[in-house]
Length: 608
Image 1 (cartoon, rainbow, N blue to C red):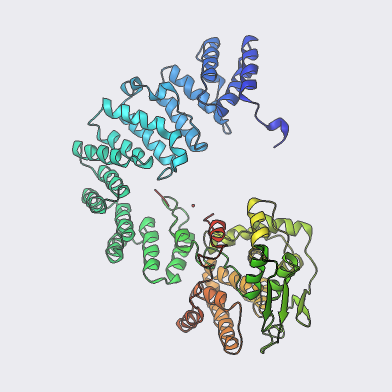
Image 2 (cartoon, helix red, strand yellow; image 1 turned 135 degrees about the vertical axis):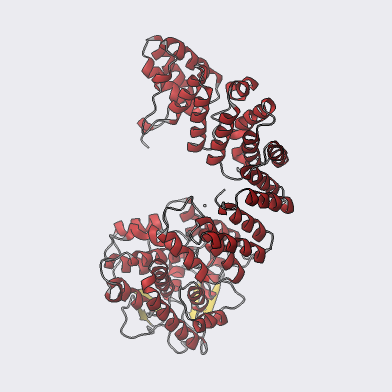
């Protein structure tokens, strides 16, 4: 933003508005008032000057704030207040609610005319109910504590309306929904129960069920939702709500029974399908349920509303929703050195992955690393001799064997790389930003990772766990390889050939990144699943064989990758489970980096 684009201080906006008003230049006065309202929507001086502008215009001033395709929020709010002053408060409230959805957390409605008891007397109760439902539609459920004061005026309107219309069922239900979102749960129950008594209905019972559920009163919640089904047995969304409530309370078998009842009525109903796959994954942990859900999402892009079931199931799970942090003595010593243990040193029985050694050399050059011996099979040698080589060795010291990438490629990757994603298909979609990079740049990025970005995330990664940043860079580079020459048929494609070279190269973090890219390809394209599953099975069998004679630092991560692979053979899944030890791939809670890791891998978004 240039200095010319920055908003003026409120006092300056008001001063310029007064000057324009005195000069009779009403459009300029309106512009400055809109700027002041955007910053101080409840300031009395702004509203006093807005009233003067309305009087000067002769027609209420509403048309000085027209609605267009890219209208400024301050103009929307000004128009709302002028509509209310002109006797159209319902239309004004519609605009205030739109502003509340566009810029949440700002007190757009905190003005006397909204909270005055007289407003509820002037408006039709059904119109008030619709307005309250609009507020609920733009508000999270529940509203975070910090955002509640901005929505309190709408709750005041609801209280006033319920006082005037104490038996209006729709109004009571909508008011309950808003109260529940604002953590007024007892009030929500009281209003919803009164609404159901006044006029029993499906929607009334749903509102009552949600209110009971928010209060932790599961039995009453399920009873209300059950009555909603009796009102309308064809509303399968309620079945999904009942199933979710049962599952949240550990009653998974009953939850799945309700979902099966919904799917028997409509096997394609999106809420039921999403809930079914989530609950089945919750029951047995089989990734096939999540793959089937991803397929359903891809084949049904026009669902009734956005769902978060797939993201919820993948969140915080190795490779499904995040990079696994690197393990091994070298990385542990690096973290200690960065935490202030400058005497840290490490002695290895066999060379660590070259990416790990390069990261240590760059981030903690004083850290002493000694390699006692090189046990066979030699980890410095590729697992297949005919693969593309990214590293060359001088003794136990690794160096890149390909040139550094261009500055533009490094910048592109720096903007994309992150340790977490919603789910593999989302990661694939996000990596399309690397599609135009040439192969030399992509290979260069793998062994010459750029510096972390100059962001809060980048500073944390660079200062506390540079190994995680390097792994992020390699993972996203390999995802970028998936977008390389996508016009080529998969079996003979450059992207497949290069990724296989990386999978069968020396044991390195790049092996994990390349295998994750192949697994991601299988998530987004069912046609490549047999091929990818075969590659994963072969690579995991090789790891297991080597692990019988020496440690393999990437073995646990590759086992997690195998269990994330679509259409994996049962014997390979069993091998992966065997390879996994008590260590889950995440830092232990007592590790000083544990909280940092949880914060870094926070989800990048549940439907109401």
